[in-house]
Length: 116
Ligand code: 5GP
Ligand code: ZN
Image 1 (cartoon, rainbow, N blue to C red):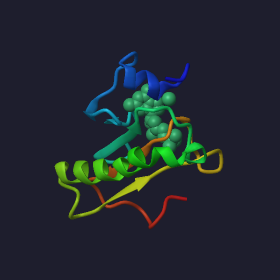
Image 2 (cartoon, rainbow, N blue to C red):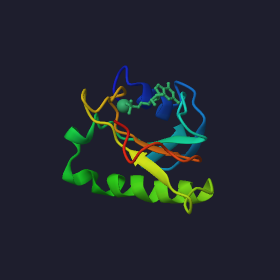
Image 3 (cartoon, rainbow, N blue to C red):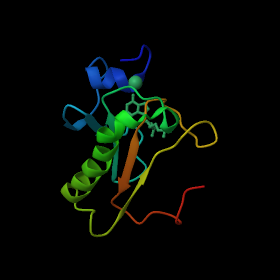
Image 4 (cartoon, helix red, strand yellow):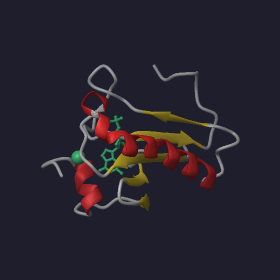
């Protein structure tokens, strides 16, 4: 739990969000400004600021981000048609919340191969 971290506050329940999944490692909630019919944020419960701060000991939670993305894509019926996962990092990567998170975006055909 990091002071003044909005995602830590969502994970602890201090700030409300539309949570769709949680377990001991991960919390998933709907993005407040969705860019597609499915736009979920898959978030480690542990405060890790960005990819730059991940450590070897974080391997289980990092793997779990992908397993949860796989399961939620299937649950939302977008696994076959496709979807995108993104982890924005740092200033040039346009990261705005400095608590590591994976965007899971789908439910429509997305523009381009990459957003740039
Ligand atoms: P980033 O730009 O850091 O990759 O993504 C941060 C995302 O968090 C943005 O898409 C933004 O809409 C979302 N977000 C920021 N604050 C909140 C919040 O309080 N609740 C929810 N559900 N999403 C938020
Ligand atoms: Zn945090």
